[in-house]
Amino acid sequence: MPDNASPVRQPAPPASSTALEREVAELIVQALNLDVTAAEIPPDAPLYGEGLGLDSIDILEIALVVSKQYGIQLRADSEENEHIFRSLRHLVDYITAHRTK
Amino acid sequence: MVAYRSGKPVSARHFVADVARVAASLPAGDHVLNVCLDRYRFTVGFAASLAAGKVSLLPSTHTPEVIRQLRVFAPDAFCLTDDSACDIDLPKILFPEVATSIVAEGVVPDIDAGQLAAYVFTSGSTGTPLPYKKTWGRLLRCVRDGAQRLGLLDGRHTIVGTVPPQHMYGFESSVLLGLQTGSAICAERPFYPADICTILAQAPRPRVLVSTPVHLRALLAAEVDLPQVDLVVSATAPLSRDLAREVEDKFATRLLEIYGSTETGQIATRRTAQTLEWQLWPGVTLTLKDDGQAWAQGGHVEQPTPMCDVLELTEGDRFLLHGRMADLVNIAGKRSSLAYLNHQLNSIPGVLDGTFFLLDDSHASSTGVTRVAAFVVAPSLNAAALTEELRRRIDPVFLPRPLMFVERLPRNGTGKLPQEALRELAARHMRP
Figure 1 (cartoon, rainbow over the protein chains, first blue to last red):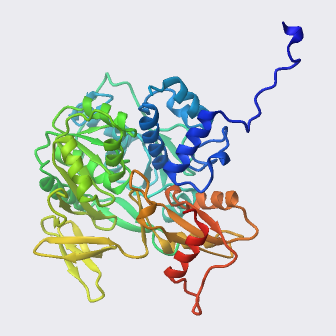
Figure 2 (figure 1 turned 45 degrees about the horizontal axis):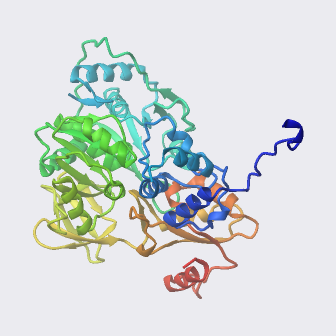
């Protein structure tokens, strides 16, 4: 009942990450040979351009990893595409929704 | 057909009308930076510029610093774009797209072979890009000789390119090749492996895939069903024989590699699955000077031009490529020099000393790309601020990865930086 529930539902703190987020972050760090650890990739910062500073070659590398690991072929013509690389969290949401393995 | 846009054919009549319409809408300046992403629009924009007597500017990158330098080089330059969010700091004109139903009669413009068609730029070593003139006649001769070597002179093909039309290779092999031979140009620039397959599958055969080692590796690794292709062309970096054979196997067709430089344009081809020797295009010759540098001349190469790679002349019109000269950097087809990158790094306020450093190929990614690292002495700057400054000055592919802050560089008594000392420094700072 509402009365017994906690007074305000707290949003998840931004630094927290799901197991899949950690897994994908680790895949990215390995695939791109990045100089950061998976834990240092902020889940909500842009992956492309500023932020983590990835470029189109990196995006292609990530697409390969995603296809191998989760069975998803990314496409530039899908409307979701521009959202996918907005952040680690967006990418993980996309994988969750579309993964075939 | 001149082109296909989203699978729909564009006739020569339609193209000529588009060129006339766009030519009439261009502003007064004589220099055009054509950044249209759509390959058809780029091609129309280039032809319209030519028809209007304007010169296309083809820098290798569009960073704010390069745009600033372009404004100095050509103060009347304007930017033709098909992206309303384009943030290039030049007067802009949005590509005038119209409904396709009405096509007026157009006249094919007569372009003099001596007309200056484009300036292409190399990064130079002092921080200022060096311009090279390309006349219409030389560009066409280059592409025609290449088409002959590639077996594309009959103009029956459809060209699918994964490279941007603004890149010298994409300009020659996905734009001019179509215009010169009558092969049709696909407007799209597919990026992901699945996209490349879709665009290929809807392109009428015979079809040519104009691509790079990065995209070919990605295509092979992606576990997608590859459509039938009648010729694969690769340039920007040499392919290994193994990868070339795998491409030929999987696509069940020939793969031809093209070799060239910004200064000379394309000058040689090889079928890498069969031979590592390059064959020069008809009329082009190479001469080795006493200092070991190879110079190209003849054919479409107007003046003797030094090549920036280490070449070994074998027999007749054949040669072997033994990598780039020590100072040169080539990442996924973007070229620069250590001197240029170092100049940009050291011109950032707060950088006391700094140097870029070439990593060896053991650091290559799965698409075969090896990045550059950098050491910097800049106690007042953090990595984010320094990277932001670099991003304004150099193409993002050259952003150092990793960027390592050190107390001082291992300069020797004469102020030079021995490679060995840099390698040791890298070994200490980089993760294994």
